[in-house]
Amino acid sequence: MVRLDLDKTGSLALFERAKKVLPGGVNSPVRAFEPYPFFAEKAYGSKIYSVDGASYIDYCMAYGPLIFGHSSEEVLDAIQEQLTKGTLYGTPTEKEVEFAELISKLIPSVEMLRLVNSGTEATMHAIRVARGLTRRKKIVKFEGCFHGSHDYVLVKAGSGAITFGVPISLGIPEDTSRNTIVLPYNNLGVLEDIAEHEGSDIAALIVEPVIGNTGLILPEEGYLKKMRKITSDYGILLIFDEIITGFRLALGGAQEYYDIKPDITTLGKILGGGFPMAAFGGRREIMQHVSPLGKVYQAGTFSGNPISVAAGYATLQNLNKNWNKIYPKLEKAGEEVKKALMDSVSDNHIEAQVNSIVSMFQIFFSPHLVTDYTKAKLSDIRMFHSYFQELLRHGIFVPPSQFETCFLSTAHTEEDLEDTIDAFDGALRNISKVG
Ligand SMILES: Cc1ncc(COP(=O)(O)O)c(C=O)c1O
Image 1 (cartoon, rainbow, N blue to C red):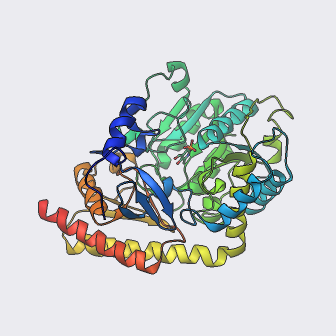
Image 2 (cartoon, rainbow, N blue to C red):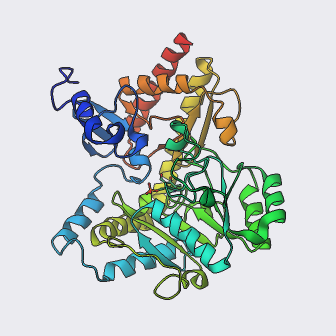
Image 3 (cartoon, rainbow, N blue to C red):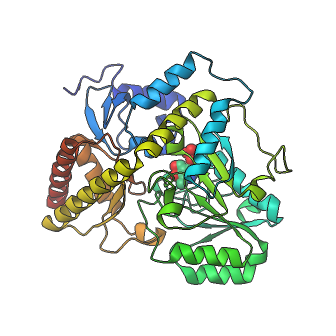
């Protein structure tokens, strides 16, 4: 039963308190939505429960890490075991080595890696390594790709940066952003052009192989392979930011799915099984430039902390053991949801597109196919907001922005999917009436 007597522990009251001590009442802008976010009390499997007594089937899944759903047993067991032995040592552990060996086995282009605490750290250091190695200044990124919130990449970024209309954050020195070349995604012509004219100054090209931060945008056929070729031709290091796609599109990530070998890979989200954990890695001769072996400096008090390592290792072991059941199951669920959404869009005469791949999906309220940032921005944001609110009323939680993507987990049951499909249909029917 949803509690409506907004007492001091209800979401509205907590939000009022939160706004006084946290900017916008949240600790990450993507969590803010109108009129106020629900505050979570607990979450198990496919469901998240609010402090107001409501429960939701969750497709936000903490923005991607929870491939086994909330409170997965393997992860809880692993961290509980680790907790009895200590939480932080400041010295290496055997588990870290086993974990790194497993990552490298699952993603063979990552011969050597460094564990860090967040995706932001991972991409920042990956770019620093590329610059250190090539002695070039510039980098290329794509409109709508989000690579974390550090200065090198926060230009025309996706996720909260589009949602809240911040194409370039205040506080980034012009000297820094000048070295970041931003190109439209899925456009080989501009990429070829920039490589030809500025290739010798470009250290790295960083890309989300599938963009999960502008809704969901897929690479056109052959696009990534050609990108690989162009970067190789000009000595530009190709960084695949697989912080979302790693272990999600396939056990070996987007690079396995599309059969492409990047020079450097960044990982996060699923890698930590719900705990702060990320990594950057690549070919041995590249990673040998990282301190203390080489002169590219990077360090972190909490890097490779035993709790995150235990959670991440348990997650990857489970994926490694059961991948041949997990990925087909996720793919089947993804197809089911996509088909249901498309049927419902058509039955309710709504102009919308549904993009999906394996266990990621998103709807765009637009008559145009969504293949890049510009097209994504043509979507009807008001309609998305109504859809989001309708879904909440139907007990479904999707990310609150048009410019995020939905995630399925192995914890979503057939019954959850049936309820979700009914909810999608009910939500789309209601918004189609309002027009
Ligand atoms: C593709 C991608 N790269 C990097 C990041 C930054 O990761 P973190 O939030 O752990 O700093 C994100 C976060 O959503 C992401 O989606």
